Structures are given as structure tokens and as C-alpha cells.
Length: 434
Length: 166
Image 1 (tube, rainbow over the protein chains, first blue to last red):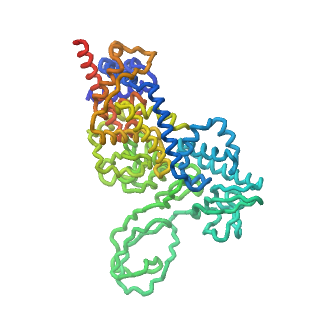
Image 2: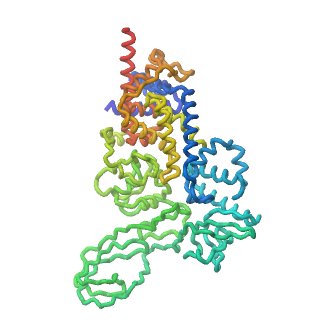
Image 3: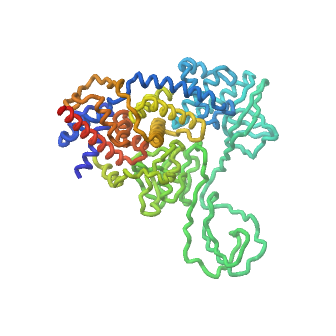
């Protein structure tokens, strides 16, 4: 169809114009369409020049800026003073205003060396928060800023200065009420001692004292680093309770399922005797009937690490695979019965996962993805076969964007689909039109 | 770094081209940034593509505005000065049309067509970004922009004819 090709070529020319090429550049590529394309591209370029007068924009900009500033000042102050990580980008509201007012250049660099309690320290945190807000995806940024907190704490105790701040790190030594977190010795008050083991990651709010000590005020978050999980097929299932009564004969347990440590058992023992306890593997029942089919255990997977992983662990999805013990580079590996999928326009990871009945986390781990919001058209992913032969819902997040792309299903009755006429055909075609 | 300073002009331009009244446009632009500041304090801070987020919010804000104010906005035409574009005096077609007429013609298009033109040509958003902002597929945006330009070209052609007959 000539129309469709023209639409694609037109789009390519629009991209070229946006990239700074001229109309002629594009027409030279497609002389056969020049007569149709030229007037259209000229009209397109004409619309580019339709903009409101700069003076009007600037005046409005100034007035709105004042409005926003006033608004921010009347907002209730955020609790938790110097506490970077859980604070999110909240103080950015305030920083927006401040950054307008302060000549960032000089101030910020001076502020870099400041410590908690210094006049400029707030400035330092603000610039960090702005950076986090503007480029949240830059890897290592949070880690970098955390290291700054650790360094600050070290300087504070060297100078025997009192201040409060928060940082995170792994606990390397635990000795009565002294821990070592991120290499810093800290005092843990008796009341706070949580179930923390050596090697766990904790996030703590601390006070430095004027005698050079660090006291933990609050353990904000603990992340138990699971003992080097070897999800090979040797689960140590300890029967939680020995059955109180001996089951009388005819018991049919159809579970041939070997539970891996973290998975939820999908076995449904069909027993003719009401057994109140969980089935104990040690017991040898005398089955009256051998199960005809071995149920394929639907492995609902892996510890869903809700926080950004500190290091990428290669996902060993199939239980039979041997995990490499301490992998540094994540290499996507295609699990059994998964297939390669090329990301199309409108796809979201969560949508793709949902349409295939797997968890988002699972897809991310198999494909070594860190950011659920970031996939690009044409990218290849490993995915299970779709549940039905339905095309994954093209779910752009509607309404209020921003809360990530983890729910493509709230598209409800937005009635926005009126322009989606045979889009999918188009997509297919467009992929190979170069 | 200076989010507001960087993003106010494009957002305002986008709104202003969709909303005739500069005061209303200013209010709406203000709403967008209030929402932004509020979002930063809340749980749904934009996690990626700030620009797309802002345009999307702007688009919703305009939609709300037109939902509420059914009446056609009053235009103030007099101070509308075409943007200076010195380097390319394109072709015959381009020269005979002035910017003002282009703007009038644009406002005769359907809302989505206006949006796609502003985003793709005016604000130079990529196809993907535009699709995200407009909650459409890439191919839908492709055909939409094609139709928009084609319709605009026809309207402009008719306007030109009328002018010659006068």
C-alpha cells in the first residue's frame, strides 16, 4: 500500500528535520515521493514557526515562578531533617526555589566540602537531590551520595562534632553493642538491637557525639542478605511438626514436587484422609494409587527484592541450572520454554509479564534489567509464551503518569482507543521499511 | 538542573497554542508545575523522562480545561508575532503564507492533530516520546501526524484561494 509507505517516509523526514536536516535532504532520498512530500514538509516546518512571542513566554514564566515559590513556602515542611535516602526527592520542592535564587555555580562547589551542621550543608544535599531528581537513572548516583555520608560521618568523629545524618552499609562486625557499618564503628543502644547478622545491609540514622562516637538513633531499614543461596535441588525441608496422628492407610499424595527454598509450594496433596499437618517428606506413605501425571511445578519465583539490588545476581531460573556463585556480570539466559521477543511500540515490561503470567521481577531478572521503566522498541527480551494468543495490551500509562510503568492495567474506560485503527499491522510493517 | 527554567517555555508554548487566551494558558502552565512540585513531595514523582511527564500532565490539564470551559476561548490575535526564522526562506508556498494564517489554520484541526504537530514539529519530541505523551502507539502517531499535516495543507490551500478571490 502506497499510503502506508508514504506515512512512514513522511515520518522519517520529520525525524530528519528535527535532527537539523533540510527538506531537500529528505526529498533527495525519496525523489519518487517528492511532489507529495514537499508541500507537506513545508507545512510542517511552517507550524514550527508558530510559537507565542518570546516576551509573552518570559512574562508568564516570571509570574508563574512567583506563584510556585509562594506555594512551596506555604507547604508543610518535610519531616526528617538530614536523611537522604528515604527522604526521596521530597525536598526538591524547596530546592527548586532555592536553586532559582542561589547562583548555583559557586555555592554548590563550596557546599561540596561542607559537613552536617555547616551553613552550606543543606545546599549540598539539595544539589544531590536535584541530581537524583533530574537523572534518577544514572547508576551509582545513590551509592556515590551514600559514600559521601559515610565520609562525612568519619570526618565528624575525627573533628568530634555533633551532627545527625543517615547512611547505609553492610554490617561487618557485631560485638555486643558496637557494630561496624560501612567500616565505621557505631554504638547500638540495647533497645535497638535488631536481628541483624554480619553481612546484612542496614540503613541507619546516627548521631555523632562530641567525644567522637557514632550512636545509632534508628535502624531505618534492614536488608538481610540471604545466605549465599544455592538454589540447587537440595532443599533442607525440616518438618515443622511431626504429625500427631498416624494416618491410616489410603493416603494419596500427588506431590512430586521438590520445594526450592523460597518458592511457594504449588503442590496440592489430594488426600483422602484429613491430614492436619503439612506433609512431611520423611514419611513414607503407602499409596494406593500412583499419580499418573507428574505435575510440572509452576515455579513462582525468587525472593522479590523490593529494593534496588546491590549487585546483579545472575538469575538461575531453571532449578537445574547451577548458579555461578558470585557473578559480577549479568548475562540474560533463556529459560526453558521461553522465547525471544522483540519489544514493540507501546509495550511495557509489566504488561508483557502480565500477559504471560509471570512476575515482573522474574522478567527483569532473566533479562538482567534493573529499571522496569526502561525498555526500548526493538530490544530483545526473553519471555514465556503468551498465555493466550492475545496481543499484549498496549498499555501506556494514562492519566497521572509518573508512578512508574508498573501498572498498565488501569487504563479502564478511558475511551482513548479510537485512534488505534490497525496499529498492530502498522507496527509490523514499519519495522522493516528501511 | 533548573527544571522550571528549562521546561517552562516549552510547556507554556504547548499550552498556549492549544488555548487561545494567554491568561488561561498561564494558569494552566502554572497548574502543571504545581502538580510537578506536589508530585515531587508525594509518592508519584516522575521516575523517568521528565519532559514526557510534563507534557503529559500539560495535555491532561488542557483536556480538563476544555472539559470545564465549554465555550470557545477568546483569541487575542494582535500581538502575535511570527518567530524569526532567518536562515531558510523555504519555497513559494511557504513565503506566501504568513505565520498568523498558519496558526488560524492549526486551530481548525482536531485537538489531537494540533497536539501532534506541536509536539513533533514545534517541540521536536521523538516519535516514541510523542506516543508516550499522547498515550498512543507509535504507528498511531505516525498516521496522526501525516493526517494532521495533510489536513493543514488543505486548509491552508483553501485559505489562500479565498484570499486570491478577494
